[in-house]
Length: 138
Image (cartoon, rainbow, N blue to C red; front, side, top):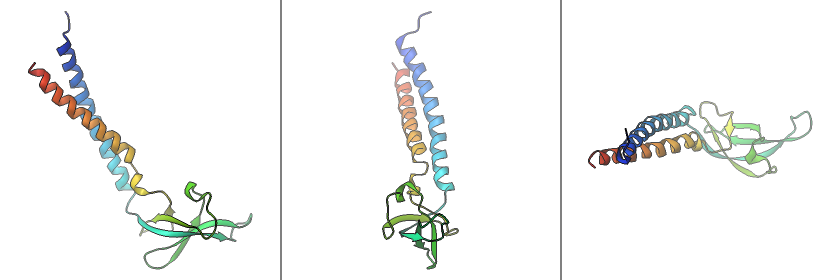
């Protein structure tokens, strides 16, 4: 029993349609969930400062104001603050519910890879579905 090229292409398009649509949708939803779970972040400008609280000598910290005007600080131990000296400005994001913690990398990047891969797989699934419909009429 020989398999014709159009039959083989139809089987491949069905497989790509199912894999692309199902896995693509799951990855895209997971990517959106990762971004949603991280919560809302408020962007502000902070300053690098020297702190005498460290037992081993002065350390650098990040200090910023929240929406209520309170000052918060955390250790400047992230990759973005590695080469900064006291007095330099740095962009930080903090949560309104817990303003004592901050992050120096953009929260919009959370789940971006999953969303991108999900969209690519969804596109492949849609194109394979269209190709499968076209192959049915050939």
